[in-house]
Image (cartoon, rainbow, N blue to C red; front, side):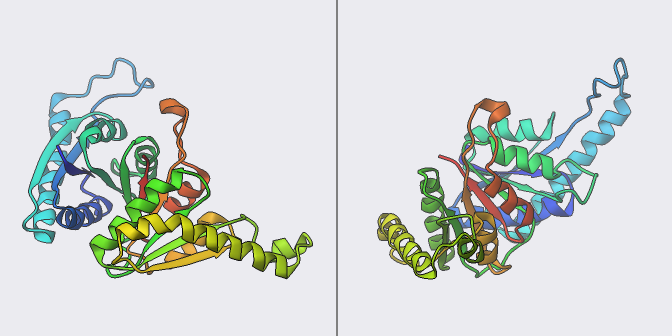
Length: 287
């Protein structure tokens, strides 16, 4: 199904994810699929424990109620979007990854480490973002509806998918694109401390600006309506992206260098830091 998949657990974070996804589905002319995941199994630390059927029924009913409430929120946000709902028993992250194989995008809310209740804690959102092979959006703040799309760019081909998606999202939203590139993780003071002359820092920055302009040119020609603001500085990449967003971005887009199979398929440190600290929706894009 060519739809946006949203994990739902009845929390405020999940509801925020549903509302964001409903607006995105409207923009992209996609359906919305809301999934309530409940887990009635026991762990290896409780061998032989049998959960009474009435408890399982109550857990399932909670998930059903959460999905119905989410569907109402979605229709209130985007009345013309087609909404599908389902309830699934299993591990939240694995269910979303399995169902998300055919989805255009997976959207999850996160309360990060601030809560122990519910399904979609930070660990689930990070797991889904790290292991999904498409687009994942993690919602921990609405961002600014008319703010720019901010994309982090490095020297690797990994960024190309993120750049392309960032241009598309900026065009859909009719907002500017802020392209952030750091040519070294050291800030200006650190460079000067290592004895690099200020004129040399300026020259290297200008070289990086020109290289970035060339790299963006092909994407920009496909989206002539998008205004580009290039920020090329010596700085920690995650900090530069977060500073550029500065509570004003509508969306932050980052790539992922995941590699090494399911267990080893991890997000890079920059993506993880952005996900942890951003106050706007963060989209992780993998080819």
